[in-house]
Length: 278
Image (tube, rainbow, N blue to C red; front, side):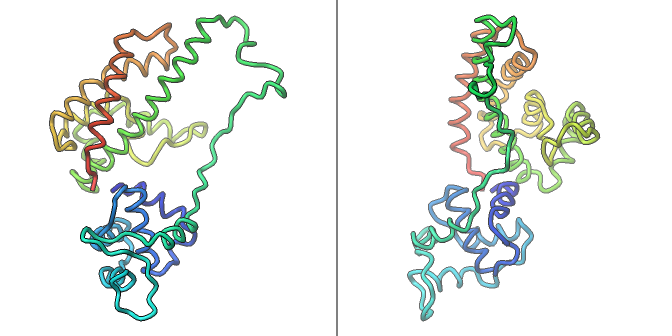
């Protein structure tokens, strides 16, 4: 369970802090089902969310869930949950009710588009562009798309596992024990600049691909299987080279790097899908 994602989730719920503890229980259950991809949830998992967010918990979560379930004995209690052997899940009508209260509007982003009818130009109209440059632009864009997905996935994984393995002081520990001088320098420069927005709230957002490799080599225990860690680390060097090729506008990217990226994607997805972050 990722604290960052939890905070993002509750930010979408209007006046969340003013809700009764019982209403917060409802939404935490929704989070576990829809965002943590569970088939059911337990009272202890709900309690852990209260603890992670440092919110005063409901006085008796188990009783609340049971009283408002199909097994409840309280007269006139609204049935919200279905009790199973594994835990609780929602009555579909109540689940829809919760969903309607969650604001899914995403943070606004730069909406850049090229409207040929209004602008009167296209990328092809830019002078001194040839067919090879056009082809490379499309090719590099696809590669960056994949790298953007991969890097953010790896960051979120590391954040969750380092927090779990090293505790709340994980960021200071990795800065003390891993050579992240360049990442620290980038963060200082970014925070001092009025032109560049902060990337994120921890050092991982300022790391390069090779930095992730250093972290994994120092703390391989973030993976329960050492071979999984070795698999990921083994490919990071090639990802660094591909990233640099895109950033520095090289003429091409060797086919062996392209093939390795394809191979890594298959391995990475398989490894990460089998990891339980709870």
